[in-house]
Image 1 (cartoon, rainbow, N blue to C red):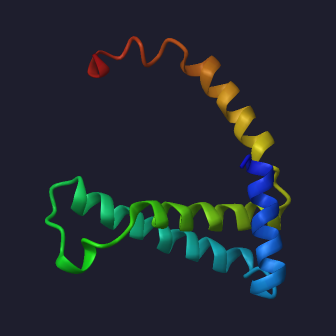
Image 2: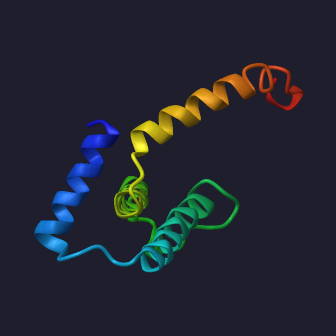
Length: 108
């Protein structure tokens, strides 16, 4: 699925199941909450914190998908074509960072 199709799938889901989009501020708060859930899994599973028994069954992929869903909602409701924006960003990063990371001694 490409990004445009994902945006359409979310929009279709909202219209069929969600009644309407939450407002942008609510979705921003929701995004923050979802990113926090991803951070909790990563910090405990891959970081130095010990993982609580209640966190061991958490699915990182599912939590990342929650983040993506809310990002797609925000893009839809603010009129952002994420596929265009993402491709533009990749182009900018490729030009700006082409040599930067290769010269970074910390990455060797």
